[in-house]
Each structure stands twice: as C-alpha cells, then as structure tokens.
Length: 428
Ligand code: DOR
Image (cartoon, rainbow, N blue to C red; front, side, top):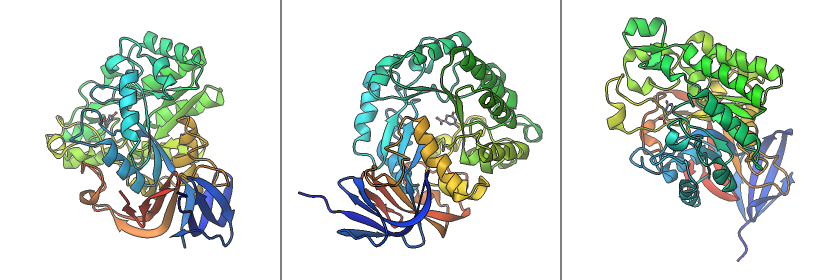
C-alpha cells in the first residue's frame, strides 16, 4: 500500500544553503518537492514557523543497556524528538559499556523502534578502563563513527596516541571524541575550583584539569594527523587552544553544551546537586569565551550532554550525587536564548555541523531539497513556554532549568517521513 504523502505548509525553510519561504512535500520517507503552493494527502501546518533539517545531538546519554531506571532508548529518543532532534549519538558509558560489536548491535537493535535515529558511539578503551584499545575496527564495520570513553578521558597519553594512529588507518572516516579531564588534577573536585568553591566549602576542580587534556590531544592530533573532537568544552582556555590549533590546520572539532553557555558556578550556592555536572559550571568569563567561540566558528556544535539520573541518585548530598543534567528538550531554546547567535547559526551548530562530525550527513542535516531524506523539524520561534521537568518525556527529572520561561518551541518533528511529534505532542 502506498504511504500517504505529507506537506509541511506555510513555513520558512532554513538549511545550510540559506532561507526561503516554501512548502515541503514528503513521500516515501524522502522529500518529493519544495516550493510554493504544494499539496498532499496530509497537511502539517507550519504557519509562522521555521522548517529545518532535524537537529543532531553529538552527545546524549540514553543509559541503555544497564541503567534503565534513569533512561531508555525509547524514552530518551522521545525526549530527543520533542526537542527537534532526528538523530542522536548515544554515549557508550552504559553497563556494559559499548566496547564490542555485540553491545553496538544491541543498541542498534533498540534504536530501530526509537523516535529518532540512534547512532551508538563506541568506547576507545575496553570497559572505559583506559588500559587497552577496544575493537574499534569491528565497531566501525557496524557503522560506529564516533568513539569516546565519555564520563572519563583517556588518561594514558601513549594509548591515546595509539588510538589516533589506529583510527587514521581505518577504511571508514571515524572521529575520536575526548572527555577532556586530567583525573589526577580533577580528583575529588565536585565543582569549578574558584571563588564559589572556596565560599561554599565544596572541593573544586580547576579549569586546568580540562585544559591540560585539550592541550595534550591537540598535540597528539598534530603528531598523528588523526581527526579528533573535543567534547563539552567549558573554559575560555580550551576555546583559545582550539582556535589556535584550527588556524594551524589541526583536524580538531569542538562542542559546547547549552548549560555551559547559560549557567555559572554561582548556582552551586544552593547546594542543589541538580547543578552538579562534569565538566562543572564555570565563570562568566568562560561563558563569554564559549559564546565567542561559537560566533567565530571555533566551536562547531552545541551538544546536549543529556545525562539523566534518578531522583534517588540526584537527591544525595552534593559531593555524593552523580554529575549530569537533562538537555534534549531544552537545548534548542537555550541555544536560541543564550548563544548570542541568530537562528540560522544556531541551526548550523545543532544540525548540519554536528551531522557532519558524526558521519550522519547528508541524510541528517542535509539541504531541504527534492530527493533528500525527510528528517525535519518545524520550530515556532515565537511560542513561549515554561520548562517543567515533571512533563519531560525522559525517565528522569534532573533539569536545572525547571520553572524557566523560554521562547521558541519545536512544533513538529518528522523522522524518515513519519511525523513523530505533531503540535508539540509525541505521536508514539
Ligand atoms: O555530567 C556528566 N554526566 N558528565 C559526564 O561526562 C558524564 C555524564 C553522565 O554520564 O552522567
């Protein structure tokens, strides 16, 4: 039986090629036509809205397998779709870790019925233990394009060099993504080391714990020619080093999170672990440097680091609670509000640029044009709402933005031609 065709009507299309008013017809999972006054069996209204390639998150913790009480691929992907994402890279710090072909297959299988495409990241080292390389080639053969021990950085410099040399020899183009943290220097720190950690009596970790590994990995990438991606950068020093490295043609890309663009260490004064995250919330000067990095192209992507945790885990004292915050449903609106970028540039950082880094382009993030994959989101830039973690599709509730009035909302999300979110409601 022929699928019903769909038209997204009355919107302004924005993609990497520019902006224009147009209707978009979708048939058989792909874009059939883009232009004025189009019709189809079913209409999705996009009046007053922006129609864009679906968002792509380079950094989501979906917690499956093993930590299903905090999130599942299904609930996390529903939160993603509600946030406008049509693809997410699922972090491999699950239980067991995604460090073998078998666990990659398991996550891919779970992703088949998800509300967005789920691209599993593989670990760089076995069990994220930092001592032995994981079977990167085997995982790459299954389609894995991004490797990371996220939650931990690879501490052993020699092993990281070997990982870089090894990946440059693979037939697939893959990227090594680093959680930049020198564990020796960060040890015991639960927030940013500075004025607020002193005032609050909470042990801190200095900016240098991140920056040392940024510096090391840029050096190793220069040495090996490998392609690296630096995750959730949080300090001005890190951004400055990436800027210099790129000017020097090192193959390094970088991401920042909405929370590091928005919040500072001062929030920890409430002693509420909802503000505990790793890397920690920093200073006003760091926030300004991250925004400047986005504006001048040093930082390629805004990635959520969506990190769900159960209420039991997050209700522990600050120094015992795990780090992490929800992010998928609020990323777009916070990026619009706090990045200092116009909508077009926000979409570049949330869609086509991360899609390219993750090896998901042009299926995701590609131009809204005839023949393209119908992974799209429709955004109402004027719609106001209030962040309510209780209403989140996530299994967890740990959003630091609860009660915040925001402007800009995802109205519809279309995955391979299927409207998975319509008028802000998930359809399954
Ligand atoms: O805050 C964080 N939470 N940072 C990480 O690197 C890991 C993540 C998690 O898995 O909860």
